[in-house]
Length: 327
Image (cartoon, rainbow, N blue to C red; front, side):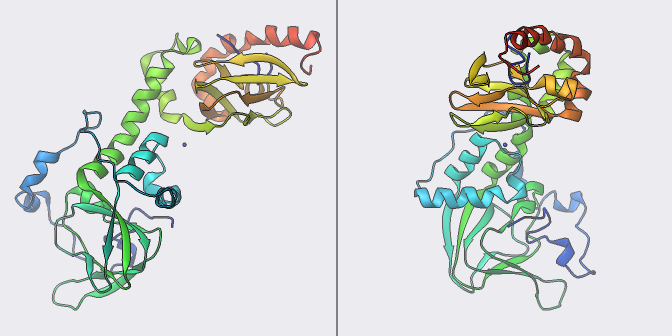
């Protein structure tokens, strides 16, 4: 079967880039206190401990304009903290963050206080001040539109390590601790569970062990397609293998539909197996979600399925004999 018609059975932020920004701190920054010193400092945290996969309380959706939603998505697209989120999780962040304004000279967060919120700076400028011992606070960093801060105190239940102060009037998108921890901590867990469930429905993978499907789930890259989008283009080099999670896709060669795909079907394998260009176009017929893996991962994880995958060559040869696809 041809590559597209070869089967039918998702400001750059450094994680240290917040009030706890090590590269900007003086060399004499004190080491954090050992866990036992923090034990009694935040007794309330035990009530909000979050285990990935636990049932979450319904989110509170904060109304926003379309312009505000677009701005939040634009910021998230360049923020490494959100790179692992799928489309639904991104939407959840957009829904839950709440706008909060800070006048110039006001502290947004204060060193030593408990961290209860995560901040994305929508507008304005803020500066980070670090105080060590009896020395006056030192300005160590400046934040501008698109920067975010406050995550480390939320992730590690530690006090704020520095003060962030509004230089100009600032507008921030704010997320509370439980929501932030649930979305960030749950991202990889939810992704794996959803993909493992989907992979169990794929006939091609029925012979794999659960551990092998888990390995595949960990490397799949999601992508969303609109009707008419070309997922694969005839003649292009084959660099990915695709599984169709939702929607419908058709494979066309020379303007003729040679295959239709539905949930659980796969395509793109023959170009990877045979090191050949794509033999047909693969076009979304409806809104679709595919998950894919690159060539090296495909060969590493699906090598044992080569014989099954090559069975589609018979279908391809038949189509080629009919002149429907290139030989």
